[in-house]
Amino acid sequence: MTEIMTIKQMPADLKRYWAEEAKRHDRSMNKEVLRLLEEERARREAAKAQAKDMDSIMASARRLQSFAVVDQRPVEEILYDEQGMPK
Image (cartoon, rainbow, N blue to C red; front, top):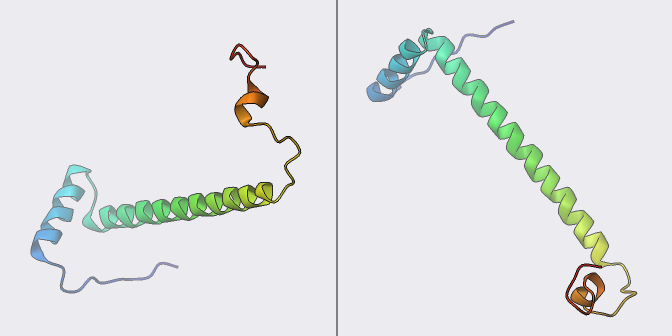
């Protein structure tokens, strides 16, 4: 079921802008604003997903930091031989 929404007190310049955008895309103003709202929702959901991924990465990093250090050599010595070549 679709709902009706009225935007009250929209500034004239903003209304003009969206009317021009709608005309440029050969849409009604209503469809243009709906497209804008859908885009914004998708952008916000993507940002939430990225934040959730970053939380997972940070949790993994904290877990890795809790592991015991078995090899006391610096990383450079572990990864490269005496000539500086990768092992």
